[in-house]
Length: 182
Image (cartoon, rainbow, N blue to C red):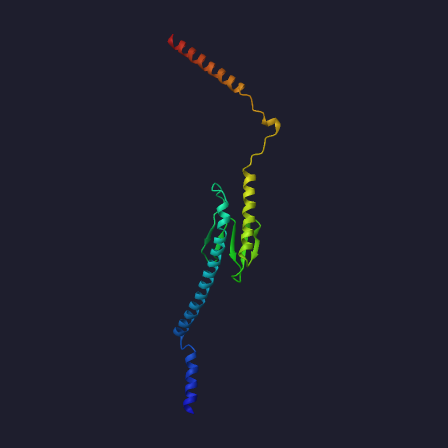
């Protein structure tokens, strides 16, 4: 009977850390376990973003080569993101299964779309790209001038002024040469 109580006391003592060294070792093991879970979650996020990236390939293949306003790519950081352009990206939601398409603006981050479905996010990105292309067209379009300014200005007066200045310069140099010769 004393063996049973002695072995039970021994088990209780083994389950508790004996000192700081054992406590540090146990804390390192727990941290490694948590880090492993975090790395697995990040890898899962990146894998989901890669699936979405591949689903967006046909959309970006349609964009003309001369349009360089989109820079798609996955950034591998603390929070992996699939960048669409300088201000819009897709990241995974808190549950790591939902896609969140967001745009950074001067008023903060705006959620443009949120879904578990890749097709829904592809549609939202397609709509976003279309709107950005239209904005680009409007920015590049030249507005016609009002009728009063659309008429080309006359080129006669600048020409006449140039002839007059040239003649005066020629006359001045001839007078200078004549006075120097005397």
